[in-house]
Image 1 (cartoon, rainbow, N blue to C red):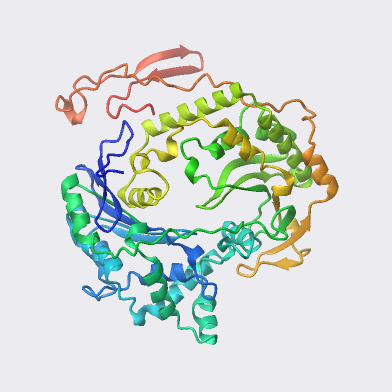
Image 2 (cartoon, rainbow, N blue to C red; image 1 turned 90 degrees about the vertical axis):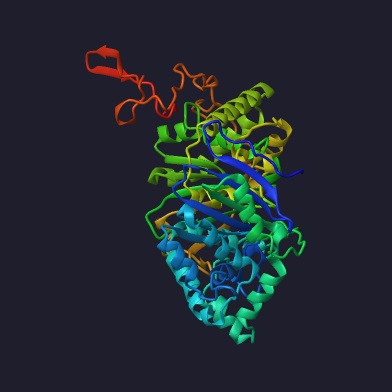
Length: 540
């Protein structure tokens, strides 16, 4: 690609953008917003806990904590947080499976000073030895807060029962046992492991940078070059994994009965899928999500609600990594639904059969509807705060081409029926994992997950279950069907009222030609008024 590049932005977005590549191969997006009340920045490194050494689980997360502990130029480990809090800002970071993301916001006039401090963490970090024990305890405390969180517990159970040859099986958070006690028993010095990890895996060419401020794009570019060009480019390849994450005994073809902390009753079906990263222009998983997660007439949820078996249903991509993804359908069940979970699974396979047999015309309509709704959502996308916006944008830079960084999650550019059908073909019982969460399993479980101590049972699908799901027949109620055409999707967004000159304003900043509400319905028991939005010109 030839830089600089101007990414496609929403029609309602008044910020200015430029994507550049620094001399050390860092790709950076610059965002100029003269009206900003906060400035911010984020740097996303394409390294996460998948890269943790087996003997020190949680090392990538521990590095995320230690990176902020002073630099050679500014050794005071509290200076960064102190300056940010003194100037109306905040900072944060997170470690995921394949990325570590660092970000902050601050008053615009202090952006350069904080950028100088922030960049130093990547050019000359100290990893102060005096901070080691304290930050290990901070990681441990963070993990302790999650121990009774059902979402964390279920996620780690999925990981812990996956293929041990794939890094998805790792425990990524870390605690005192994994970072201090066990390494010490083996004569391993954790800080030295951290230095080796950083030296080996942190490189400019697998980093993405986002800077947002009131400054002009030229000034922001100068700041990016001044402070971030010094980060060393080790010309690394992004880590890749060849093992199949669920190619192990018990990972698939099994039912997991899980005891929750809270009063939950859920049924989750999960199928491993190929990575969807390269398919963001066709979005096969999003099309499946649209159909399986549909809540209108003829949908899975509509039938389940009528039977009194479920209250909510969600469907879509869950894990989304470079080498694989997972697609899941999760339902919040009633007590009656819990008793009939096998019939619910059969119902879902009946719907999957409808999808598998969908005509090219049905796929065309589904694609167009998803495309049009998504385009409308992007067109009228709300303005995000710099704090979260910088973090998300830096993360998205790893997933999308430079021109698509902003619109990537919303574009449907390439209809690929063959591809989406290949995803449907993977939704078979042999490639499925069932998880049932209910307090009724308490006291009757035989297994316990290592890290979160989640109690659970695991049992193989019975032959009659598999037979029923492979040949689900038709829905007895004859109520299941794919969504009917949606006649209410807008595609014409021409304004009925023209935007007026902002300078021509009346009292209290109101438009001099402001419209007033008009009564459009006046019936017994109902009066409705309408007023065109002549301030923001948004359809909401």
